[in-house]
Image: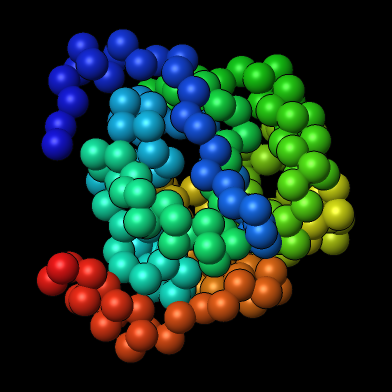
Length: 204
């Protein structure tokens, strides 16, 4: 599936619903939806984004998710069952994250902390250190585990999985995701198990 430039421009500013379950343990936080993500109404939907390949390599999904035309019902249910959720720092679609203002990021930080305090995940993974520095007014923050929690949840800052970010790879993101899952108490599938389940689903 593809979207025209006019269709993508038409969703500028649109929000994307959070993917959350009743037993949330591990919460991934993107910066904000891109235009393709807003059009598909699914997080990290643009092909070339490293999020779902890294999630699969880390053993956090039973198959490689393709959300480019929207998140499949079974894929969303699988993530929810496993205690994995996805949200955004700012729920406003732009073509690039750097189109957001400092004020929007700071307001997003307030909303995110309130959300984490309500949902109570064990671990939060923030995907984008530059946005985190601005939003939380921590200009010297670096990637990795943070000494301060976020509303009671352990906090890991990882790189932005966008294909435009040359500083991250699928394996480096997968390693961070797997460690976060371990701390959050999310069961990680063995590679052989996830691959066999993926093949079985593909044949159904």
